[in-house]
Length: 325
Image (cartoon, rainbow, N blue to C red; front, top):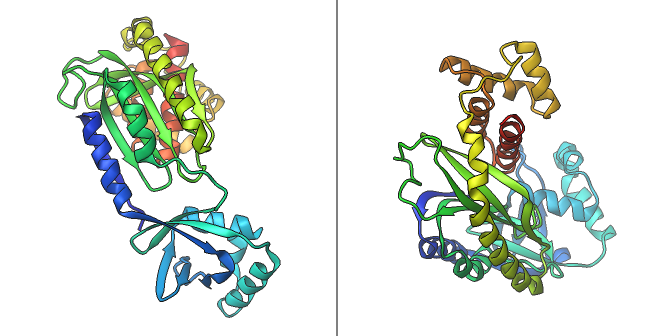
């Protein structure tokens, strides 16, 4: 049921702002004492609901997890409770919990996030509106939103930054903005290098060149000022990272041996199943097992993962390439 927004560019900052604004219009916020909620326990499909007045809302996976964290009851345990005891258990757990006012974020008939009234959210459209004017030198390459977090990736304005680019190995400075209204990540900006390989863009973060802010509304202006400084620094430094793309056909000694390669990937905390898929892609294309080609295969496979894992695998690919350049 989760709603996904995924757009690829180039897009202007105005276009992205309008997309985020339209998405925000589909959402609403309700404040309610959680003891006034009527809980409908997990059904046979593992889905639970809240009834508020005459309306019934389905809980997203995140909302369900947040609700059970508040109760102090493991979600997995609650799901295993017999259906005839479910409502009795929830009534007991809620009576034992302190009074609190929940802030519910709702889209249609789904509650996709739950926090208390004290949590200071930063909405996607609000922070992007303030940051966009600082990013006038950039155009948006990708916008991805799954209701839990939003990722916006931008690069220098250049006609080659697009799916039809034939300039394999060209690199462009860029930034990645990330936000979550519910604390699954901080409001952050990483400076990146986008390297074009066919339709696949490798993202190389510069780990020290980042801005982060916890979710307190009064912090957003400080965050915006930090963005301005980091973008200028990034655009000055981009040329130094081009070395990595020039080494894309340089084989890594020992990686022709499967055991050594799997050992290396295990050291990078890559699951064996994922490593197997990466090798299959490289070998099926009869490519050299270079750091570049392995990195490209990792980012390609990461597109099949959820947003959280994508960010992890993209950074992993960048570490492998930069370590071997």
